[in-house]
Length: 217
Image 1 (cartoon, rainbow, N blue to C red):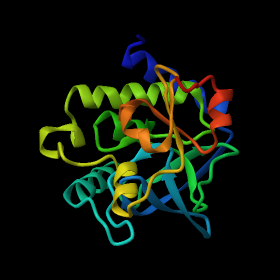
Image 2 (image 1 turned 60 degrees about the vertical axis):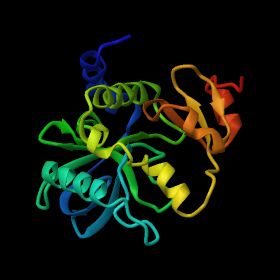
Image 3 (image 1 turned 180 degrees about the vertical axis):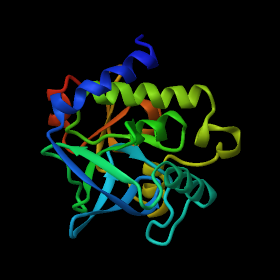
């Protein structure tokens, strides 16, 4: 298995290979651990951290409490209001809420990775995604889990992954198929719990997963 240091080092090449656009701006506020508001020129943008999912501060009136506020405060410490950041994204770089979905760079540090490496967020990719990027993010997340950092410390043992929380808080079953990036096994939405959180890849259509080499077994 490639070392964490190696996987992180290759990330410096990925923006030119897979991510084509940049937005430079000033952080206005940190809403929660994975969402910022950025001012760029005369425009304001909502920015969602690519590949990162943090506990919910307020999701349709439901909250993950302390875990959510601590994760938010950790991110606010990394990119406090007034920080001048660069957001790197590609042609798929907007989510369903029209937020820019990208990698946040501040002082030559990729903030997305810092969140995962320190354990204050969960890896979260919905197809399409870059294979090299998801591998590196997965390794960073596994590092945090193995070392009981952040949300993976004993204090937060009962905290759900944000995706699972969003589903359970509204009595929903997810609609995305779930792939295991290590085994290439594919699972139905209701079986998401069978895939370790650091190895999950989500697909809105099973054919997308098939095209990436995933299969039901």
